[in-house]
Length: 358
Length: 228
Image (tube, rainbow over all chains, first blue to last red):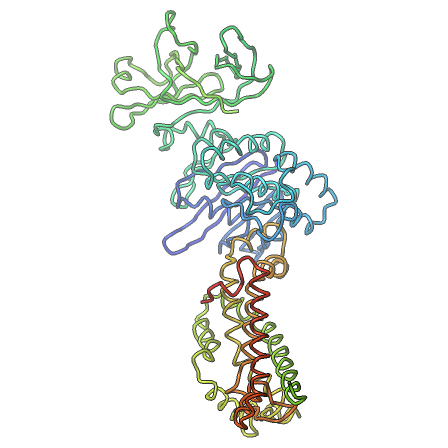
């Protein structure tokens, strides 16, 4: 299996970055952290925009940097696509000329086909003759993404592409990113500080703090790591990959299946068999010892407690295993004691609500 | 009317200014680029040297050039050794003096224009496979176009108008170093006010036309940009 190996050490006075990371060469790997955590610096090191004095970077079997062997491929020789936080379009060129700028510089006769595909994928066909200054923030960012993709890169690097946009513009771009995720066969490394973007896009989650990697691994595993602050957060949640099994039109519900069970969620307008991501907040999960028969809650699932920990103030964190799925529950410390919950106990998880992500 | 001698001085002046401006743009572009990007300790001293003619009396600059380019000056000895003779009181001496004298008027607008481009555009170009040289020509030059227009106009017009330096190193030799500002002075000295009017009027018209074209062509005229 091909992987991305990245290890960097750099020291900018106050700020230190020290990472050693292996990422899969498929899907979206999200670098998540607060500002100052080093996520953007790490991405810039991967792009070669920053040269870490000590570093090793291997993508798909080719070495881009190896400080021990004095190897450092300059950015313009790396087959990558990069999307900046600000779209960074060339203001003296039309949208089309911006899209063609990189294409003219790669030896790749696929160019034109790829360009037409990306123009269609990002819905920017009507903007081609416009100048960047006459575009909205969202349009500009879509053009920037298309400009990077048109090169047919081996890897796409995105540095908080939504951070400079307002809520409405974010909602306008997210569907395009989700489409990219489904249609692209190249790995994407995506930097963000937004939990919503993590939930919607990540396959692999890397959490950074103060220039170090706190955790890295598949999304649901990393999300539910009880030793990380993420699981204690009010917004703590787990994301499940599910498939539409049945529509219950009369109740406006859709039944979705996951490995080891099924859930009822609000009706989704999509065909049976469609893959979806649903997010379940830890605060929406409660626990009962016996299977409740008279309850308004639709989703009651058998589960096994795999971890317990007391959180801040009155709160406790319960980690549950449902077949292959992980689920987090935030309950009160008092309930934890009253129910006598123990690791390994079989219980029932009641899920009050789910949000559908894709 | 302009006499043929006056016409000759006009032609000579534009020739000096044209050649000097070309040299200033060729030398000033890499210099301004370096100054806008470097963190070197030499940035301050080099900036100061380039800007010196802005505050130095032209006669002082002219005096030093005369001494340096003369037979016993450092530059004079080099040019003699190269078999070029000495530069004072020659056409090329005038060009050299003009280049030094007007250089800040070319370097500073370019430097300001380059600084405004920022590194983001260059990074974007690098991620789109453009080498540093490639991105200089395909991104920096087009984005800095207003800066180049300002630099060329300021450099050219400033050279056309120079007087002190010319008098010190060029003298007043017809068809070699007698430029229009010196000729106007000659006319006034000889109380030929009518001839002085004609020449002065030509320069006034020239300057006004250049500005008029600029302010008509560009929505935000390059000269309106403050240069630091």
